[in-house]
Length: 568
Image (cartoon, rainbow, N blue to C red):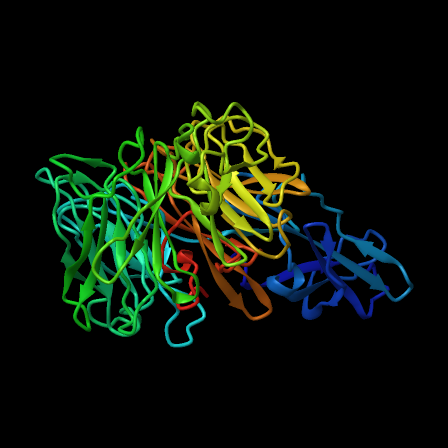
């Protein structure tokens, strides 16, 4: 059964002739160390031959409806990596002479059988054409709907590679981006979809699509998702996710992309485009600029956007010497500021920084390679203050990570803590104000995703979700320490993308549905060299994105941290 289902349960009592006391047949449910209050079962009026040697009295059958959400508001983690958890039932019958009869006491190690309810944490799964590309994303809420539409992409070319799914698992719509998709799909306020295109015929470009029909095609409407247009094709590789500014008065955003590899003479390295028309029908240029980067920077590795309170947007591009910030004007990029330690050395930043607003001042938090000249084992996640980076003094504040290992993704933050997964698979939390980091054991898997932050407890006690290249989906907390594999999905050839969580409320039950796109490899799931989308139920609610919470590495309109973006 699913988390919010109800089911009728029957059991038999033998009273050996004394009769069952009025209201004397009760049941309880136990899960996650909690036992429900006793509730009465109803007599069905059915009888069967009894088992009493001294009496020919018949046994009596009772039944009750098990409302799983209220009887077991908290679930144990899945005991096996199959997405199945167990709720244990116990019956207590009182006869008319005061004798109790109880069903056997069950524990978390009891075998499946009578008295054990199997609850699937997997609500649904759907197969994609091809292998998944980038992280899943959610469209903005529509028309008061309780759940949002899921966006997923694959590497398939020549057939649908961009998909919309309802919260029920129904595929609303799909379409083909002809040149292919190279990374995360970023979602705008009106459901506009922005993505880096794959290299084809020696060029690549930013692709724009749009979720249409007002309700994104929900309810069987025509379309659901249509192409808007390809932006300017350049001889480059768009190997990093795009970032979005706040929407303007038309409701549409600028999309900023950075090439991770370029060819030609002084080609542009900061690119900005915008949908044209309402509804949009093409992609228009805003600015393409070749920004001079510090010595040794190489090409850019990623981009984030800071736009506090809807003011001017600033792009932060990471590279081999830290990162550089560039303001985006109406039709051009402005002068850059280099965050490279005042020219005294280099620190390779393999992914775009998260932007922490400290008193309204943007302080990037970023991962780096431990082999970088400035690391020296003192910590690899640091924040930087633009006010000191132009001086010949260090502007890095070392993050107190427990291992001098690479961090290849954008770090996260919430509740005054930063979060990161290092390249040994250890998940760590560290106070942004300084102090000792919390960490869990390193993973034996080759790759581990960046964490997804969930709610229901203040950081660093909040749950985190990571996905490993061996297909294991883990839910963990760092304080107190707990780490459980709840599901095994298809394996990954490279680093898994971070899941996304949507709020789910059904009656008395609140929590989230966590969407995971697997790597299409063989594990305990069916193996067909294509990816599956998994919808995994969790009792923990999503942690909303805000100016103080960067909950996953994605750089869509909710992660540009501006007041105008719809993050809920």
